[in-house]
Image 1 (cartoon, rainbow over the protein chains, first blue to last red):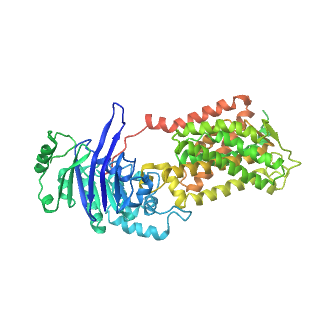
Image 2 (image 1 turned 180 degrees about the horizontal axis):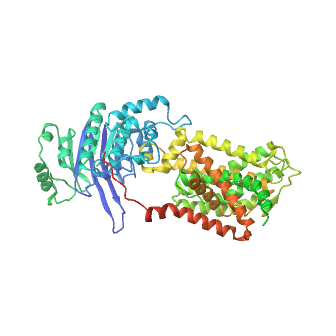
Image 3 (image 1 turned 180 degrees about the vertical axis):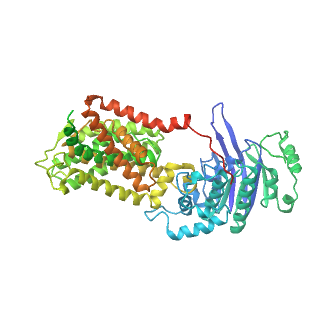
Length: 264
Length: 306
C-alpha cells in the first residue's frame, strides 16, 4: 500500500540551523495496516507524515502509494490518496465555514472542482448520518460555523472529513495531543471505529506509549530520522511501556528522558 | 450652507457610491474572502476606465468596451497572482508592483495622454453624471448602477456557492486544510485575484463614463475607498444576520454611505483637498476597532469540553 524508500530530508542546509530530519527512512505498509508511531522530539515522526503528504519534496528517495510514484506530486494532488488529521485542531478545518460546507469540501477531495453546486440536498442528509457516528451531537448543527466548535469537536470533524472519501492511507499526526485526556479518549475511540469500519490503512503518531500499544496492529519507533524498532501482531499486543523504554535505550544508547512522553 | 444644495448633491453621491460599491465588492473578494490585501486595484481602477473610454472613442459599443475592461482587469489580477504564487512575492508587494507597472500601461492605453475625455452628447454612454435628473428612470445613473450591483451580487452569490467558489473561500480561510483536501490553493488565489480585479476594472469603466473621462490618477487611493466601503458595510449592517448576498450588498451600501458622508463633509465647508487625508484616517480608525476591542475590552472566554 505504502512504500517509503530511503528518503532523506535536510532543513536549512548549509546554515547553522541545518537539521537532518529524515535520514534514510524506509517503511512499507500492507493494506489494512494500522501503524502507531512513537519517538522522541525531533525523531522525524511529523516530518515523515509531511513527506508522505507532500508538504515539501524530499531530497532523496522515493514514495509510492498503492504502486503510484507520488515523490514529485504536489501536496494538493497527493491529497487524492490521503486523509489527514493534524495535531492542531485549527489546522484541519475551515473555521469561517459551516460544518456541512467543510464536509462538502472534503467529500470532493481528489475530484475536479467545477461550477456545480457546492453542496446538494442529498449530501446534507448523508452528512447527518455520518456525523452521528462521532456521537457529539454535531448532526443537529450542520450549518454552525466550525469556529464555534471545541478543539475536540473540530478534531473529530476533521477525522470524519479525512475519511469521507475513503483514503488509501490515513495520516494522524498526534491528533489527540492538544486535547484534554477525556476528549482525547473520545476522539481515539472514534478513530478506532472509523478505521475498523472501512479497514483503513493508517499511520498514527502518538506520544502516549499506552495508546501506541493499545491501538493498531503494528508499532514503529523512530529515532534521528529512521525507524529503529518495528513490531507487529502478537508481539506488539504483549508489549509493555517498560519494554518500549528499554528498547529505546538499547537502540539509541541514550536515556529516554522526554517530558512529552507520557509514561503512565 | 444651504441645505437644498446638499439635497441636490445627494443623488450624485448615490450614483457614485453605487459605482464605487461595485469596486468595493471586488475588494471584498480579496480582502475578506481570500484574506489578501491586494493593492493592484489602485491600478485597475484606472485601467478599466482607460480601456473602456479608448474603445468607445474608437467606435466600439459600450457593452463590448465594458467586457474588454473586465477582461483586461482580470489580466492585471493574473499578473499579481503569478507574482504572488509562482514567484513567491508577498501579496502586498506583488500588488504594489503590478499597480506601479499599470501606471505606464494605463498611459499607453490612453495614447500617452494622462486624460481622455468622452463627450456624453456624441457617444452612447451607459451612465453619466448628466443622467441623474430629468431623464426617464431607465436612463438614470442610479438605476443603471443599481442593476449592475444586483447582477454582480447575484452572480457572485451563485459562484461562491459552487464547488470552485467554495474552494476559493476555503483557501482564504485555511490553506493547510485546503491543500489537505486536494484544493490547488495557488490556482484559487490567482482565480480570486482575477475575479476581483475584473470587477474593479468594470467599475472603473462605469466610473470613467460617469465622470466623462478617464484619468491616469483616477485609481489613486481606490483601495482605501474600497476598504472603507467594506468596513462601513460591516459596521452598519454586520449585526443583521444575512447570507452571503446580503454581505455583498452591504458592501455596496457601505460605499453609498461613504459618498453621502463625503458630500456632507464637503457641504460643511471642508476643503476637498483634505478628503484623502480624512478618508485615510477614517479607514484607519475603523480597521483598528476589532483590534482595540480585542485588546482592551475582551472578556475571558469560557472553554467548552467536547
